[in-house]
Amino acid sequence: MLAAMTATISGTTRVVGILGDPISHTLSPRMHNAAYAALGLDYVYVPFHADPARIGDVVRSIRTLGIAGFNVTVPYKEKVLRYLDERTSAAEAIGAVNTIWLRKGAITGDNTDAPGFHQALVDHRVRTRGQRVLVVGAGGSSRAVLFSLLERGAADVVVANRTVSKARALLQRFDPEGARSRAVGLDALTDRDFLATRTLVVNCTSVGLHGARYLDYEVSATPQGCVHYDLAYGAKLTAFLAAAHRRGRPVIDGRHMLVHQGALAFRHFTGRKAPVDVMLAALMG
Ligand code: ATR
Image 1 (cartoon, rainbow, N blue to C red):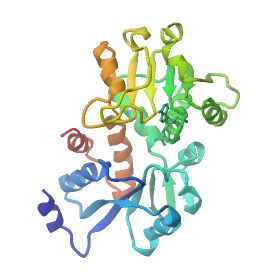
Image 2 (image 1 turned 180 degrees about the vertical axis):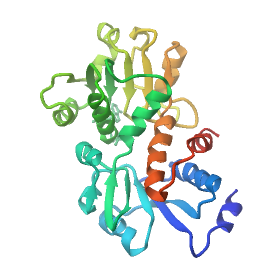
Image 3 (image 1 turned 90 degrees about the vertical axis):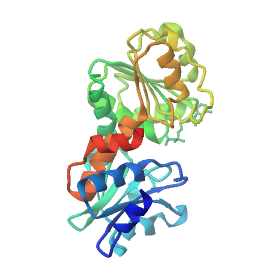
């Protein structure tokens, strides 16, 4: 596989990268390179363990090295904003980008996490409108989720976070009137009366990855059809999804969001429609 891939790299190959720190866990190269191979595109996608002190130089390499584009992951999604020439309206509203590329000569940033999050719901036939949602976590990845949920008509969104002030600050941005949202502490995760009112629970923390325990959470108090969606993913079900699955609740694995945000980024990098099935197969394999 690797030999076949490197044999196709030539003087004309376009380079796409992903910027992160750490970066060794990323599945994005596997997914994008599979897509290039399937469409016969002369592109290669590589991980970059970017230097935090030089992130501006790294962004400018789109011009200086002719890089076709970057995906951006933790901890750079907000840090790169100031080095961009332009941002899409979604990137502006969310205040974070996950994709940057050269558009008509301008280094442009987009946020494809929000539509990626939404498309995974659509694939699982889950409508956002009218949902009563519990979002766990108020870090960088919660931003796109809150934007998408509130923009698409969720009825009520409760954000539970260890640091409640961070949840409050995020909601100030996405629902300044507080009409459809509120911030609470993690004790909400064991409040059975509250949990019985939820129709969708989204985990936006990295707690429970790689075999670790999840937070104290009474999944059995949620209604039987309450959808459990984890942004985090590993080689097998996360602790959060495993608990929901054991109780017969429908689950959405984070790799579905990963593939859709990647497919939209692919279009920016190559100008071509992404082969979503190929990309998903590469992730699940
Ligand atoms: P990301 O950008 O991936 O969202 P992040 O910004 O580090 O990552 O956010 C991680 C989220 O997981 C935060 O909501 C964090 O809670 P705090 O805001 O209180 O830090 C949450 N988190 C991380 N470790 C946690 C733990 N052990 N218990 C509870 N919450 C945790």
